[in-house]
Length: 208
Image 1 (tube, rainbow, N blue to C red):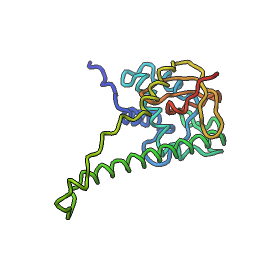
Image 2: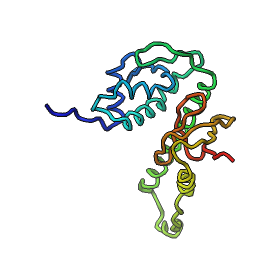
Image 3: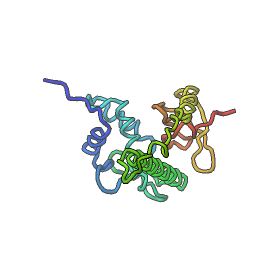
Image 4: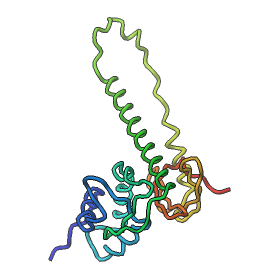
């Protein structure tokens, strides 16, 4: 008997979770706010499942809870559900505020990316009705240096480690959190209230 094929893409893992726990996860329509700490429940339920690893499970869960569809569902008073779809607690105003902030940042990031893509496409488009002295009127521009933001993020990430206590800027008030995972220029942390979130390195502050 052949071993089951492991799921390696977050999209496939989420689809699998929706199949295994249809009252909790969904790939279409409105999402439901998840119970805080649901990763531990998932890891326990799927402990003997060879199709998905804990690492892939954690990554897929992060993608799911950072999707616009999910963030729209996190509203004050809405009931969070466990794996069986049972209501366990209501979403707090603080969690709604964080979801709205994350959604705003995500939309801004996409808008900036689209803007950059459109500019690049415009530059590549052939010019129309250009005079013969185009070369004189369009001097060569020096290459822009590498973006410093990436280097700064790398420096900050190098100072972090899993389990480290940090301050996270979410909204107007910094909150205490514990580093759970480092992924490229993103940091996954768990706030003191139990909420797990993904933030950029420039949102992380080391305690004095």
